[in-house]
Image (cartoon, rainbow, N blue to C red; front, side, top):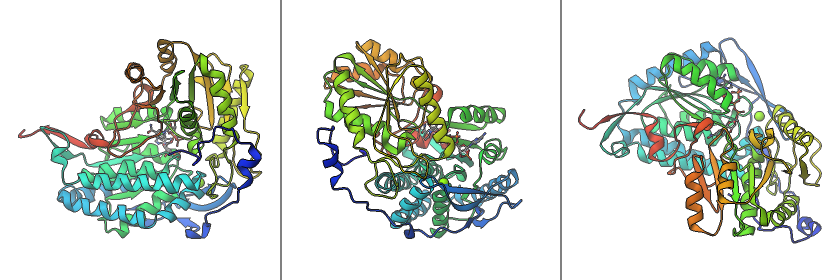
Length: 498
Ligand code: NAP
Ligand code: MG
């Protein structure tokens, strides 16, 4: 999952690197986008009860794409009732192998229409088509296939325990991986026999709706998968709904805390996948070309809108100048621009509000005395874009070194010893991801055992697999998605024979 096909650390001159550049733009006409979308509830597409709508836009231009139903508390209520009815009348008691057939069918339909999904994801959210085509859509299908395979084998998921479904699950997803996060959520929930009410992010609702349509096409019983579009209030209505047995949320730490309070009131089960401030720790014996590519991928993949982004670089003093020189040259080679162009490395920032937030962090860092290095290549004039940025010369206590920017901004610090590297990496309220770069196996073990992060990659970054559990600790949340651990979050477990 590298953001560029070449392993070029900037030794070629720029003119040569761009000489072969010819835009190759994926056609918008691959998808039919309707002017208006309803929400999906009880197997039907319908308007919000009060007729409210919101607009979704294309962040690469700022142009209006479509109007989408804005679900109210009443619409959430309807969807929860439909999910409950489907749970009790069909889904809960259906043999696992039959549930699997529906999920396999959905996965295959998604594969069949993968090009359409990739283009729609890119238009609605701004991510490069190469990423939606090669990462988001195939991984979403992989999650559906993987969990479809578990549906009739749940008795083996947790040795010595029997699992039963929980009931109606409320799932709330963010805008950075709109389709993939939906797949991560619905695949295990449905495989385990739960029914779902899903609330996708306001700025990127279209691929969730299209997947909901595919579920209808796949013949899912009405009410098994409901998609209630809307903004924060719709999500809050879902998270606090008394008819929901479990809430699964992926999003910001702030909203996650509010949801934790709301679910605590009712004793609703909860998993939270929240923000992060992941650190790359690069030792002086690391393979530098590989580390450069890993660091670039870790922060510029998906414009840095990645919860587990490596948004901090901790580099050992002896190689700091060399590594930073290579990184500065390397970011000059990143193509920032039209997300539908297959050569684009860094696409559009998802929303104007997010662009302003990123700008604010970088301006504050400048005032804090940081040295700011940005690519010199021009940005598109329309749409929301931010240049790949490296921030150096800060001590570590500044906001940009501690808070999640969620943009293409890398904050750099140096360290001398392993212990100092670990202390710096752990100096954050988050605990989602980290990367260790060294040729020494013993050092990988020593460091990774001390890093407080749910996922630690060694000499790689941003590797995902449906069989591998993913999740955080501390203010990055709790619970896991993927693997057997992810299934347990959707089952009520009892000892065999109890
Ligand atoms: P967000 O503002 O927290 O929103 C996430 C979802 O919650 C959206 O659907 C949002 O709706 C909804 N929401 C907003 N306010 C709500 C409320 N009071 N009650 C219930 N739901 C509410 O986060 P985001 O800006 O979309 O996403 C970025 C964040 O997600 C980052 O912090 C990132 O690190 C995190 N993330 C974490 C993971 C992980 O696995 N740990 C993965 C991806 C992203 P609207 O869109 O309508 O506001
Ligand atoms: Mg949009």
